[in-house]
Length: 317
Ligand code: FAD
Image 1 (tube, protein in one colour):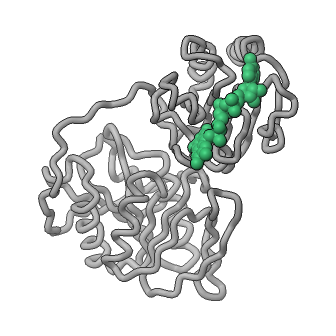
Image 2 (cartoon, rainbow, N blue to C red):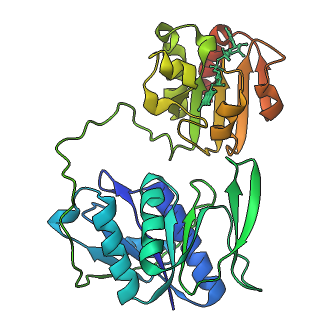
Image 3 (cartoon, rainbow, N blue to C red):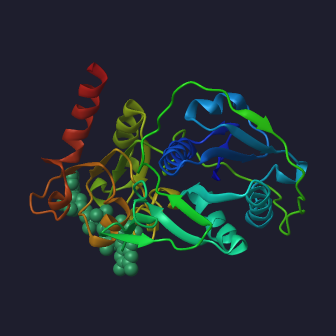
């Protein structure tokens, strides 16, 4: 029996969220006495045997010029074929943007039960029960997966990466690859070095910053911390910041280790996208701002005074 983990990559590197999925899949394999294997589509600069450091025994590497650009439909068909050929019983994805798109499609093809947003190892002593986030992270649900084949999408930042030493065997399989039905004619990369959904630290600001011209102090803090930038919805709606920084119910949902919210009131729709953050720090001049109720640490003060001092203090560490 095998546990097959989909290995997502960008810019030639395996994503951190996939390392989490690999660590998670390996632990499940240990739990149920199965072998953990990975599947990677397209080209990467990562040394593939070194993925054995995460505990997988094999990497199925599917190379084909048609797989150079991510396409959910053709990728789904390839992953399902690999799962069939390797008799995988559990297929793991990260619940990142690729995983959200692929996991349900693969589950349909494999006639598998599907759990999205898993946050812990399954309980396998009596059935196969997975804990997942529901209602935008406001509650948990324990669900039992009853199908023979199971597809699980693990929430980003929900499971620690565990690395050891090992060498994975790199295996190529005979797989039919279909030409994508949609042709990508160009891509524009957004600015910023840290991906918002993968970031361990996120510095986010809201309408309290008064205008786009004041974002320099936010950018300085973010670059000092190596953090990704985010913002509240009105800030993106007013075009102070790009929409790909908008977090919340209608924006991107994130779960970094540290979320610093500056000049953001803490409306329920904002919290819906950030309340899975492990530690929340709020900086707001209004001591009654609702965000303080959700904060682990709060600073009541003017962002224009507090943030530069915080950046200086971090630089000294
Ligand atoms: P404000 O509510 O105006 O708050 C600004 C805060 O800055 C205040 O708390 C103020 O005390 C503080 N402040 C002011 N000056 C300073 C200063 N100098 N120093 C420090 N603090 C200062 N919002 C989202 O963010 N994401 C979503 O996905 C989202 N989805 C929505 C979906 C729906 C259907 C609806 C109806 C709303 C949604 N909203 C969303 C909007 C949400 O309800 C709030 O209006 C929004 O989050 C408020 O943004 P804000 O906190 O930046 O602004």
